[in-house]
Amino acid sequence: MTDSQFFLNSCYTGTHNFNGNIERCPAWRHLKDFLHSYQENIGPADQRGTCFRII
Image (cartoon, rainbow, N blue to C red; front, side, top):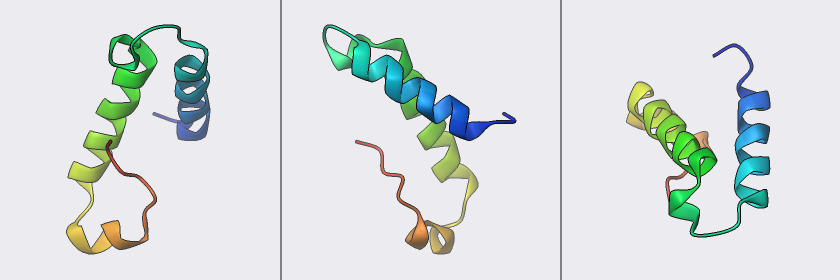
């Protein structure tokens, strides 16, 4: 992924404009997958300064 800020903004817009159960929102699922991969790829010590949390 070359532009993660664009991706995150797109996910935010998609979830914000989605009508219905958030768990059925494709943008929400993409965002959760992204955050899960991000957290798997960094070590526990690196997570202290991040603001990403999986809900």
